Length: 427
Ligand code: HAM
Image 1 (tube, rainbow, N blue to C red):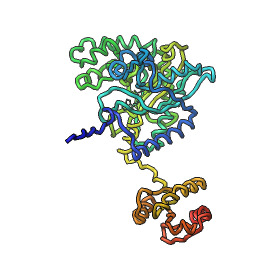
Image 2 (image 1 turned 180 degrees about the vertical axis):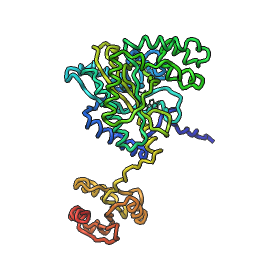
Image 3 (image 1 turned 135 degrees about the vertical axis):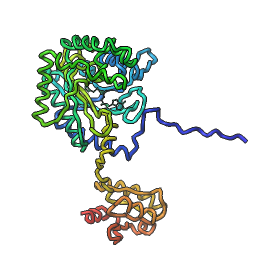
């Protein structure tokens, strides 16, 4: 016998997930809150392609970063271009700003974006290969610490609006072109005699990106981090004043923070302020992070342009909301449930649904079910106020039954009066 081979059911690629309807309700909540906050603080929505030239990220995020070295999904096109699935949003927004000369529209502009990002990471809780970010960027104008504070406060308010508790904000300054080189040398001098005791990654960081020595999570490197030189003592006067001013804004706004001199971030484009948000007592991962990136536009061939921004990971926010017991709004039940008895009624039902749509009355059905009992049960489950029952007899008489699902009273009314009668009952 010729046994047909059964195809296996395919799954999403590792570290990537479907967002099914029930899960989607959490995402809607995050999206709605984001729209409110960004609207309030004057951020305009911007969308950029998911694929960009790979060089966009190697130039900005940094050739030596984990993101570019190990985590970027690259694609070679038929014409030989090397594109990358975006691992983050900031570089794309700056590319768009330069490409479309957006600075001409206004000296300073605020943008926000949402969408999937891709990093080839080792998937684990809160760490995915396709994840989603919500990001805010302030581009142009002057390098005013007030904008750092405004990005931070907008992000903080979003977490608050989502009822996330125990928010911890960590802030640091990683200096600028003036003061950072001397600090890096000092870090190298401090670590020099202990290189053999550090992990392999730190040995690499020591050479390529010494600031990242402070970001190592490896157990054996922790004791050395504790006594590492403190950047606060080495900041130039401009960076030191900038940091002080950002902190004063936070004090003024009543936003609590932890000054964390070991916070360095995993992307190379930052200067001065860097920050991260956590939900204390929950997971160890950051809900979001960001900072100032005054040199990024120059990395892309543009003029020196002050900029600051931050981004949240949506999956991490949703997980935190769930684990903290945040509730979702009750689903609004449809007002009307249409019940059919027989094939002819089923045919008419779709037309009635259209009439109700036209009248602005929400309606649903279980037309795949034939039994009256099963349909009424579904209507009950939906929480509808009214069932419209249509059978052979009603069709021939030009009527429809309106049944009040609260008290089970029902009445047969001429179909032309259906909308009017429903509206009366829904009042
Ligand atoms: P980031 O810290 O790399 O910064 O990412 C921001 C947030 O995205 C993280 O705090 C985290 O919530 C989420 N995230 C990152 N990687 C993953 C992952 N593999 N799985 C799940 N969630 C993840 C940036 O991307 C910068 N562009 C932020 C920024 C905007 N800086 C200035 N403007």
